[in-house]
Image (cartoon, rainbow over all chains, first blue to last red; front, side, top):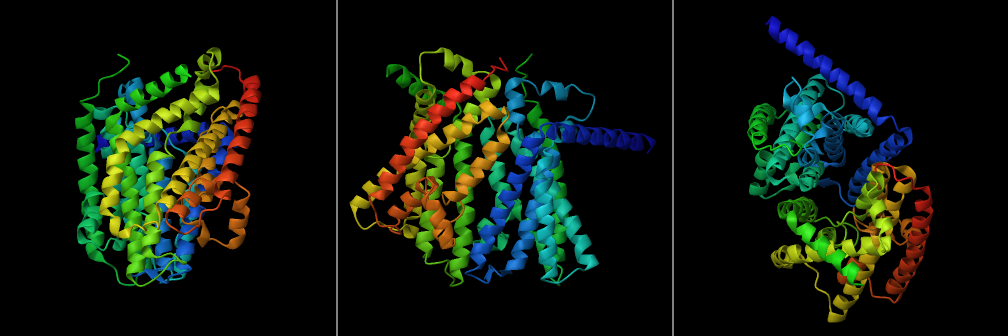
Length: 269
Length: 263
């Protein structure tokens, strides 16, 4: 027990130190930081505009009203924002593999998955969390209002969504150890996370919906949390399933990361 | 001329090395299309309609957007120029007896040829699979006008992103600027949704800029939403000439600013 507490304190201290460095690194060029921050805001605005333009012609899509779709969009923005802020090191991992600079991380006496995941963070993407939060408040206000149980459950499911998406991302990025030039994986993951801004009920084909729920777990990133936040009836089945999927993806991706790492042949040695 | 052909050939060979990566990019692009396909089908399946677009027209719009993404939009000219300036690699191009714009254009052509070789079959397969959703043009002339529009789009795309890339002479690390430029240009070309779904004043503003000729106009021609007009060629040609001069001017000015850091 004492050992676990010591380990926890050690990793927490490293995590906080890394965040401090990341904030300093990203704000070292204030103009570039502000341009990045503004551009992220603009991207979020265009996402909202896309939904707004469509809803100027329709009243619902696949049973989801405008404000419910906004809740999906808001959840997606928060998950994507957290991915960029905490786990953006996963994006250039192929470059580190090609150049052999991954060695510097692997040789440190800390869990390599932990370091690879938290090494870099893009804090300009905080704009996604601000916009996403505003959308969620608007969606809540215009649907069932604030309810403590729904809100706590929503936060828990959103946390599961972040873990599921992080794990899926880690597993996909691990493929870089085999194909070396893995910049396409970056684009793939970007497309996957962007796709989670639509409720999975739009996939009227059961097979496609099944794929986007269990294989590429889009449903648990934004749809399931948004459903809990904006519907009076709580779908406990999906809430439990979300927890089970989190465990499966988290431990599965950890195993796959370790397995893939066995194929790493350092370019610098 | 032969030196530029060598650059084209090298660019094709370099692209061929990373086949697995290219395959992943194809999968990613089709992934996005599948999502949007279901989104629109779901809306129209409920008996709704977006603007004056039929389901076939809106699906055709996104089919062509996917094809343009694979063939025209994805060669990363701005990013490669930015990298060369930031790392100092551009110095070797400056010292060679070549013109930088023509050199980058040759690289882009090589990348385009590679993409045509690799993506043609999947695109034809996808078009056959989705034939029921495709709006068929009334005459062969429409295809010819579309091809002309697509060539204009390619040239404009290259010049616009070449200029965006040159910004690195002044900013050093330009990822944020590239990202901003890409987001704005993508929206202005109709990459998010058809521009005629937006208010009329927006279209009026767009008429004074080159961006709608990147995608919205060529796809409008092939889907029959726009009737071909000589201005669809004349205006992009004038823009190409103007952007060519601006690009050369910026390059000369940028070189004066360049300090060769990173060498």
